Image (cartoon, rainbow, N blue to C red; front, top):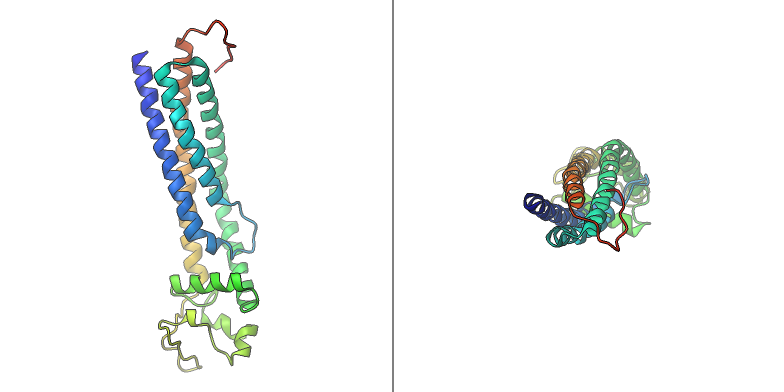
Length: 238
């Protein structure tokens, strides 16, 4: 019984640490990936918000796991086991969805970039996100800087490109024979690889966390089974 108690308390600490990690990843994803995913033309799940909510819930229930193990409370142990089962299912769904959804995000992002170029100067929010993206990844346009040349904004600016396409703050000269100081690479390949790799990391982490729940479920059920039922309690199968 003592070994089960210590094992469950150790697992609860690891579970709590995993929740804190998910919370940190959710904050990072909201800050760094939110603006880039906003350019996508496809509807995608709000992954940062899901991570923030799940991380917060895991932190709270991690403390419950430690408390239920320390007090040897049968009802709390079964409640904790049920929560771990829910996290197991949610983790499997989130992880598999993330792995399968990466290609859809890439296709939607390519279309969204083209829309952002064509509406540049009209939609300020998307224009700011596009400028930030081009500066951060040292890129210009969707496939290359040439994508800008046929946009309504560029035609009004005599075939120019935004300052975010340039190396320096003073801008850059663009002519058929001179592209000095210009980011020549397109943004789609760079950003889709960045977002896809990070989504893969988050998805595999969700699957790993889900697999971890099996240990916690087994420990909680074994410990609950060894504790006599309270006379006034209502027994429910673990």
